[in-house]
Amino acid sequence: ESFLLPPAFQGRYHLFARADATSMVFENNSEANNAAESPQLFDVTPKPYADLVVNAVNVPGTGMSGQPITVVGSVANQGIGVTDSSLSNDVVSLARDPEGGQILLSLGVFDHFGALAPGAGYERSAEVVLPNGISGTFYVVVVTGSPYEFIYTTNNRRVSGPVSVTFTPPPDLVVTDIAAPTQAESGSKINVGW
Image 1 (cartoon, helix red, strand yellow):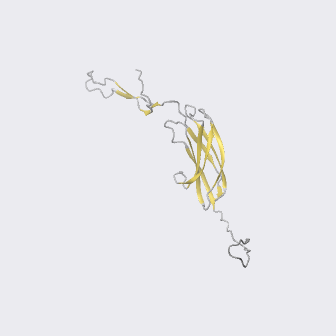
Image 2: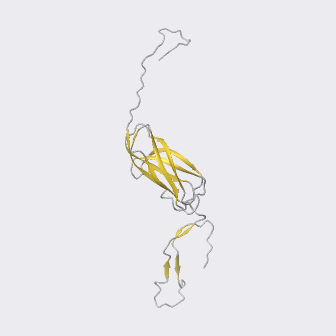
Image 3: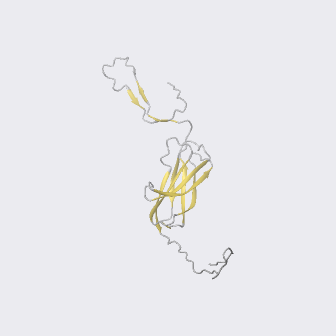
Protein backbone atom coordinates (compact mmCIF):
# COMPACT_ATOMS: atom_id res chain seq x y z
CA GLU A 1 0.00 0.00 0.00
CA SER A 2 1.04 3.57 -0.59
CA PHE A 3 -0.19 6.22 1.83
CA LEU A 4 -0.28 9.96 1.36
CA LEU A 5 0.78 11.68 4.57
CA PRO A 6 -0.97 14.95 5.45
CA PRO A 7 0.86 18.28 5.07
CA ALA A 8 2.97 19.39 8.06
CA PHE A 9 2.90 15.85 9.46
CA GLN A 10 6.22 15.09 11.12
CA GLY A 11 7.68 13.15 14.01
CA ARG A 12 9.09 9.79 15.01
CA TYR A 13 6.65 6.92 14.98
CA HIS A 14 6.25 3.18 15.47
CA LEU A 15 4.81 1.49 12.39
CA PHE A 16 2.42 -1.42 12.89
CA ALA A 17 0.61 -3.77 10.53
CA ARG A 18 -2.42 -5.78 11.55
CA ALA A 19 -3.96 -8.68 9.61
CA ASP A 20 -7.72 -9.18 9.71
CA ALA A 21 -8.24 -5.84 11.46
CA THR A 22 -12.03 -6.17 11.29
CA SER A 23 -12.04 -9.82 12.54
CA MET A 24 -13.68 -11.22 9.41
CA VAL A 25 -11.64 -14.45 9.39
CA PHE A 26 -12.36 -17.18 11.93
CA GLU A 27 -9.05 -18.08 13.59
CA ASN A 28 -10.30 -20.08 16.57
CA ASN A 29 -8.87 -17.62 19.14
CA SER A 30 -5.45 -17.50 17.45
CA GLU A 31 -5.42 -13.74 16.78
CA ALA A 32 -2.61 -12.79 19.18
CA ASN A 33 -0.09 -12.86 16.32
CA ASN A 34 -2.14 -10.74 13.90
CA ALA A 35 -0.15 -7.56 14.62
CA ALA A 36 3.54 -6.80 14.23
CA GLU A 37 5.73 -3.75 14.65
CA SER A 38 8.48 -2.65 12.29
CA PRO A 39 11.89 -3.26 13.90
CA GLN A 40 13.02 0.31 13.17
CA LEU A 41 11.36 3.61 13.95
CA PHE A 42 9.53 5.53 11.24
CA ASP A 43 10.68 9.15 10.86
CA VAL A 44 8.59 11.67 8.94
CA THR A 45 10.23 15.02 8.15
CA PRO A 46 9.23 17.88 5.87
CA LYS A 47 12.79 18.05 4.52
CA PRO A 48 16.24 16.55 5.14
CA TYR A 49 17.51 17.65 8.53
CA ALA A 50 20.83 18.71 9.96
CA ASP A 51 22.07 17.42 13.29
CA LEU A 52 24.60 19.78 14.81
CA VAL A 53 26.77 18.32 17.55
CA VAL A 54 29.42 20.00 19.68
CA ASN A 55 32.30 17.53 19.43
CA ALA A 56 34.76 19.19 21.78
CA VAL A 57 35.27 22.12 24.14
CA ASN A 58 38.80 22.81 25.33
CA VAL A 59 39.70 25.41 27.94
CA PRO A 60 42.78 26.10 30.06
CA GLY A 61 42.81 24.41 33.45
CA THR A 62 43.27 27.71 35.27
CA GLY A 63 42.12 31.30 34.93
CA MET A 64 41.80 34.52 36.88
CA SER A 65 38.66 36.49 37.59
CA GLY A 66 38.23 39.50 35.35
CA GLN A 67 40.79 38.12 32.89
CA PRO A 68 40.35 36.45 29.46
CA ILE A 69 40.62 32.75 28.71
CA THR A 70 40.61 31.05 25.30
CA VAL A 71 37.83 28.56 24.50
CA VAL A 72 38.42 26.20 21.56
CA GLY A 73 35.53 24.10 20.27
CA SER A 74 34.38 22.13 17.26
CA VAL A 75 30.92 21.61 15.75
CA ALA A 76 29.87 19.08 13.10
CA ASN A 77 26.73 18.27 11.11
CA GLN A 78 25.96 14.56 11.49
CA GLY A 79 22.47 14.87 9.97
CA ILE A 80 21.18 13.77 6.57
CA GLY A 81 20.82 17.26 5.07
CA VAL A 82 22.58 20.57 4.62
CA THR A 83 21.74 23.14 7.29
CA ASP A 84 18.71 25.11 6.11
CA SER A 85 20.22 28.36 7.34
CA SER A 86 23.56 29.89 6.46
CA LEU A 87 23.77 31.33 9.98
CA SER A 88 24.11 29.37 13.19
CA ASN A 89 25.40 30.52 16.53
CA ASP A 90 27.38 29.15 19.41
CA VAL A 91 26.56 30.38 22.91
CA VAL A 92 29.38 30.17 25.45
CA SER A 93 28.36 30.20 29.13
CA LEU A 94 29.97 29.68 32.51
CA ALA A 95 28.51 27.02 34.83
CA ARG A 96 29.06 26.07 38.45
CA ASP A 97 28.61 22.31 38.00
CA PRO A 98 30.21 19.65 35.75
CA GLU A 99 26.85 18.87 34.08
CA GLY A 100 26.49 22.51 32.96
CA GLY A 101 23.05 22.89 34.53
CA GLN A 102 23.79 25.76 36.91
CA ILE A 103 24.62 28.53 34.44
CA LEU A 104 26.24 31.54 36.10
CA LEU A 105 26.19 33.82 33.05
CA SER A 106 26.67 33.99 29.30
CA LEU A 107 30.22 34.74 28.16
CA GLY A 108 29.23 35.52 24.57
CA VAL A 109 27.39 34.52 21.39
CA PHE A 110 29.51 33.71 18.34
CA ASP A 111 27.97 33.48 14.87
CA HIS A 112 28.98 30.96 12.23
CA PHE A 113 28.26 31.96 8.64
CA GLY A 114 27.84 29.37 5.90
CA ALA A 115 25.76 26.25 5.41
CA LEU A 116 27.14 22.94 6.69
CA ALA A 117 26.78 19.82 4.57
CA PRO A 118 26.40 16.41 6.22
CA GLY A 119 29.80 15.37 7.60
CA ALA A 120 31.16 18.94 7.48
CA GLY A 121 32.12 20.96 10.52
CA TYR A 122 34.16 23.82 11.85
CA GLU A 123 36.53 24.61 14.68
CA ARG A 124 36.61 27.96 16.37
CA SER A 125 38.56 29.75 19.03
CA ALA A 126 37.13 32.59 21.12
CA GLU A 127 38.56 34.72 23.87
CA VAL A 128 36.05 35.29 26.67
CA VAL A 129 36.44 37.26 29.87
CA LEU A 130 35.74 35.59 33.20
CA PRO A 131 33.58 37.71 35.51
CA ASN A 132 35.13 39.82 38.24
CA GLY A 133 34.92 38.69 41.85
CA ILE A 134 34.71 34.91 41.34
CA SER A 135 36.94 32.09 42.50
CA GLY A 136 36.62 28.33 42.60
CA THR A 137 35.98 25.63 40.03
CA PHE A 138 33.82 26.46 37.03
CA TYR A 139 32.92 24.87 33.68
CA VAL A 140 32.45 26.33 30.21
CA VAL A 141 29.31 25.27 28.32
CA VAL A 142 29.02 25.60 24.54
CA VAL A 143 25.59 25.30 22.91
CA THR A 144 25.14 25.41 19.14
CA GLY A 145 21.99 25.66 17.11
CA SER A 146 19.62 27.51 14.77
CA PRO A 147 19.00 25.22 11.75
CA TYR A 148 16.18 22.68 11.44
CA GLU A 149 17.30 19.51 13.25
CA PHE A 150 14.08 17.48 13.38
CA ILE A 151 14.27 15.69 16.79
CA TYR A 152 18.05 15.77 17.10
CA THR A 153 18.52 18.73 19.42
CA THR A 154 19.72 16.98 22.59
CA ASN A 155 23.38 16.81 21.49
CA ASN A 156 23.81 20.52 20.76
CA ARG A 157 25.78 21.21 23.93
CA ARG A 158 28.99 20.15 25.56
CA VAL A 159 30.59 21.01 28.89
CA SER A 160 34.32 21.56 29.27
CA GLY A 161 36.59 20.15 31.90
CA PRO A 162 37.08 22.16 35.09
CA VAL A 163 38.61 25.63 35.14
CA SER A 164 40.15 26.58 38.47
CA VAL A 165 39.56 30.33 38.78
CA THR A 166 41.71 32.39 41.12
CA PHE A 167 40.33 35.62 42.56
CA THR A 168 42.08 38.69 41.15
CA PRO A 169 42.26 41.38 43.86
CA PRO A 170 40.47 44.50 42.63
CA PRO A 171 42.32 47.79 42.32
CA ASP A 172 42.17 50.16 45.29
CA LEU A 173 42.10 53.69 43.92
CA VAL A 174 43.31 56.34 46.33
CA VAL A 175 43.34 60.10 45.90
CA THR A 176 46.81 61.08 47.05
CA ASP A 177 46.78 64.85 46.66
CA ILE A 178 44.31 67.68 46.14
CA ALA A 179 45.39 71.15 45.07
CA ALA A 180 42.79 73.91 45.50
CA PRO A 181 42.93 77.61 46.33
CA THR A 182 42.47 78.52 49.95
CA GLN A 183 40.11 81.38 49.08
CA ALA A 184 37.50 81.86 46.36
CA GLU A 185 34.87 84.39 45.42
CA SER A 186 31.32 83.00 45.16
CA GLY A 187 30.04 82.77 41.60
CA SER A 188 33.55 82.51 40.12
CA LYS A 189 35.43 79.54 38.70
CA ILE A 190 38.34 77.96 40.58
CA ASN A 191 41.06 75.54 39.49
CA VAL A 192 41.23 72.23 41.37
CA GLY A 193 43.89 69.60 40.76
CA TRP A 194 44.28 66.09 42.13
